[in-house]
Length: 67
Image 1 (cartoon, rainbow, N blue to C red):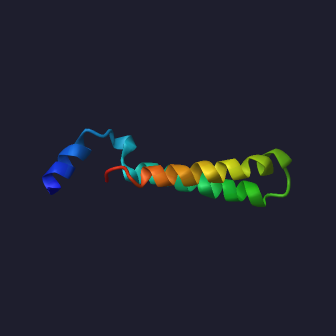
Image 2 (cartoon, rainbow, N blue to C red):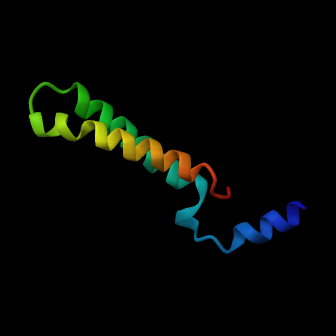
């Protein structure tokens, strides 16, 4: 069964593997938190929730990608 999983994962491009995509999703979550806490630009604050939401949904989706 592990050979089947390995064979299935091998056709995935390297940039679509779980590791790099999880890093991008976590970066989006962190960026959204920083945007939420900064006191200078109202536009950054306005888009912070959308950024956090996009990062969270991306992380949930990416967690189903092969290693």
